[in-house]
Length: 461
Image (cartoon, rainbow, N blue to C red; front, side, top):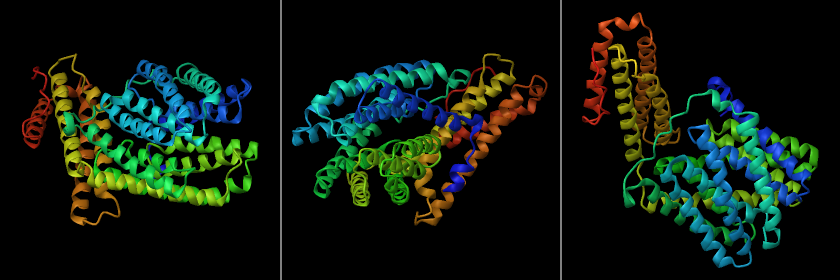
């Protein structure tokens, strides 16, 4: 776990900048809310809104990120109003919460923007339960959310918009299909069923903190597609929570909500969430758990019994997610893995075809863009294959095969990067052997993908 986080590559220090900007944006949002005279509950709400805005908005372009950020309050404020108005109506509140869960997962079919808005809607309802929001608090909470989103946007798009100097990152489209053949539809049903189980059993465990179980189920489904991915993510969530609770007993509980050290540790937790999210879900959940404990310390309700309850509710949520992916319209790991590998291979074909066109003198051909797309697709392949290479996977033959496939795809990516570099060299690119090699790669990929490769450009030497 330590190696995965602290020795993981960070090209261009992107994760470091992402995390430092988050600490700056969220910290500034909290300060602004405090200067505006908001209560502790309002300030916490504003800080969490800023965290979500900086964490969940992942559109490929800066313009797209700005549009999605502007849409967040249009989704979040009505959900916040519904959660507050239904605070004293448990049945209606629970049914509305489940509807938000289902809609939030289904929204992924519209790509990163739908995903961001779905997460923000869910977390707004969740935070309302976390802070026991009531109708009388709505004006203050509205103001805190809007003020924090404006502050976070000012930091992200004004003070430190490092993405403007980078090419837009290609975002792989979610798997297609219609009806129940669409993965997002099946997952929306799964998540709603799992959240329903977590809600009922969570309320039996605790009538006050039941929403922890629903939150655990929800976050296990985020950024997963197959049954195997969801199971691995559930395991990592429980592991991160267990370690985080252990740290909470050593750090958060003895602080008793002391403002200055708690604020410093909250900033460290925010940094940890953003810095580790891309490389280790366990570490991210550890940071989230300690952050929640520190917030409860500020609210004056943190004690060891509460931490034990959080672990129990997280376990309930994980069980709900496992039952849902196993028995409700399951999406097999093989199906998802095969689909992403096919897309990665077709991208290899397209990159090779673009390189061949460039070698033939077509100045409009741009294989570099395909390389960036391939890197994104390989990330999805690694996520899909993660259950098969997990240390606890019982089938050693499948584990070896999965690792071999990943190794071969990494070799493909490395060779494609080298080919693109050569194609860009006006001297080296005149070697006719390169064009012949490109044709062989295209033919091999077409064979592997049963002739479904992306059509290559028509310009050939």
